[in-house]
Amino acid sequence: MAFIDLGDQFLALQKGRNQPADQGRHFGLVVDGKEAVRKALADAGIQPLPGPFLDFLDPWGNRIEIVSYDNVQFTKASNVLPWD
Image 1 (spheres, one colour):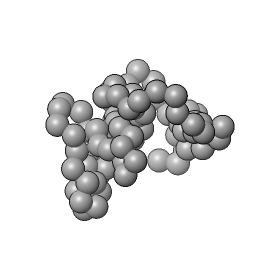
Image 2: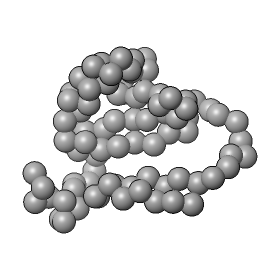
Image 3: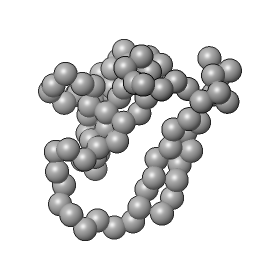
Image 4: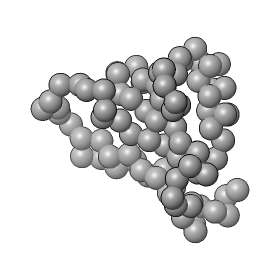
């Protein structure tokens, strides 16, 4: 098991898999500029998945959801706010 610290977010990675892939399992990243991420994905040739959200698949088929801070019920951690 490994945790990757991303300031006020983190990814938890775990070795092995006991279940098949599904459509619902994903992780989300909260960002300041959702449209900047959309542009970066387009520049990299990555197509968002159809639907109302900014979701895409990484090269291994993991679904990633990009969410703007104004669409969540929390704010940045106090130690991250000064980085703006």
